Image (tube, rainbow, N blue to C red):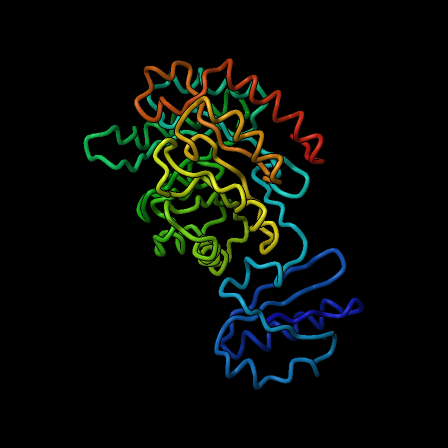
Length: 338
């Protein structure tokens, strides 16, 4: 259930209601919009139904939330959430671009990539220090040494760092280096991991699972938010279908759907979504045109020598061209880049 406070409701009235609900063992979440304050209640349905909430001072009305994901839904919060990652905003009319290699391979490779994407206009450097791979014999990442390289790249370029956490044990060490924690598609329903990042103060990038429905994806975000971390950005990265030409099928309809039913920002990953570098540029353009709040793109100084996902990585020249086109479409869509 959500409680919609009246426009004249005072902070004291809000606190009285929240304290009373908390004392009853209910989980309470506060959303303060431009014109309305909303209190979300999660807990025993029978107990909630017995409360005479609408009789409390300052309450305008109560609304029963019908979807499973309460905090993620537009019913809980009408205004778009804008996630602040160290001064870089994602959501609303703010467009963010995260770019870099799939994996941190060496200091030289990473620094070269960082300067390339920075020059083209990206605000985030992406790169995996921990790499969950389908084959146990594939390159698994440089782990903490890779995180140290990412931190050095941030110091030299000013780019924010987004990198993946692969398990609960890696959260503290990755959090010590990263500006934003990425949950990869394979871990979208790793519920213990979702709860753990939900207890941190780091913004989270949640990728859609390989075969996840939108409902399952949003419920995964609910796990994070229910632990108190509201700084969640969704990432559409393609889903597995019977199509074999592309690595995945990039579901851009999900961008429009999420915008309709959730207040969370959503970005698009056309690199994993297609698996072919020649398709990244057109799908990046399409993602922004569909209303996405940003992009995640793989860029490598020499894709032919990449240890991971070279086939879908853009060269510096192709990334520069992609960024020029994206900026043009962003203006049409009323988006601005920091």
